[in-house]
Length: 485
Image 1 (cartoon, rainbow, N blue to C red):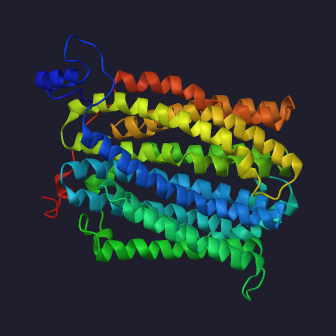
Image 2: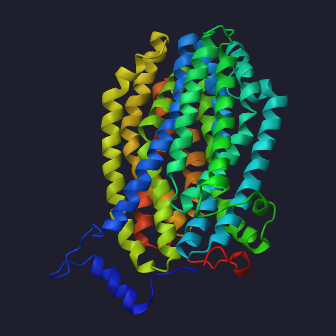
């Protein structure tokens, strides 16, 4: 049910946020230290976690890229499947956070545990299906993206090993999402840091055959990442068992599912999962389009995308922090605070976007020095990063505004409709026509592929500030537990 506040008193309180001491001058800034403390602390820790997580991909790119360009392109294609898995698991995670953050605000720990159990079963099932598909049909999976047999052959060597990391990735991220929803984020940073250190060390040893180990090339990179994923899962499980005091999740609690909460999760989470799935497929389709424009376009896209992910960690972290902040606020019943919070958050997003754009544009040439690639790939990567340094401002605003504010406010279907319209009716058709009908350059095609980041900003501006996304839903009584008094 859509909510607008708690009666006349709540409306007056809400208006008070926007009214100066004298007159009725609009103020866009919330003056609450706990609000900023929560937002920036969550954003910083989650951002560092994301930075280290993407650092794993960057280390793979750098070390494999220094080994051979064919290997780099092979990893890039295999990582498109990993990206699809990531989008699926993150979609499940977002549903968990939306339910759990509200339950945390209401001090209902039983619902947090049940949401984690539901998310775990769904994510493990999805990752197992994807694992089976790519293990038994690796060539067919990679041939979707390119016809270059040398690149496919390298990708197969990587994919047959890395696919076993899918299950561990799913378990780790669902458990971390449950912890994040109750504002426990430091463990995620520790897990990501350990993964990066293990991955970098093993990459160096196994790719190039150091310290007496055989030179495994691209297979060494896959083994290193698989080992890191297993260890990070072990760390999270041990933390929950020995150190966590908020959720106190036990293995037996993951074996039973509350029927009412499961239905509620499907109602709230299925649009998020569907949106992320379509987005993951769309990203794969983008790689297909660029992949059929040559190995240089594949390598340039991989490099530009990886660097983009590194510099936008704060943007994505701000969306995660927003989901917890807005969800907890609604769960506490403080609906009147949501509107002023949303106003201030939008300004913070714009500031983050401008800073990110400057960093990406200024550092693009320096970062490319670490890659051993052809001059054509280098030039394309520079062009791609120039485009991203413009569109990232749109990304930094619309992505957290829609996936952070609107979704956590209760309207989980809008992002699905919005992304479907822009990606499948505008971005992909225009890019496909540019590449295969009009025979335009990869640079122009890339502009088409990223144009939605600016276009969706106008939609986000209207959607967020109409405030029709603030909705409440009741937690099933049977999902509650004595643990969460």
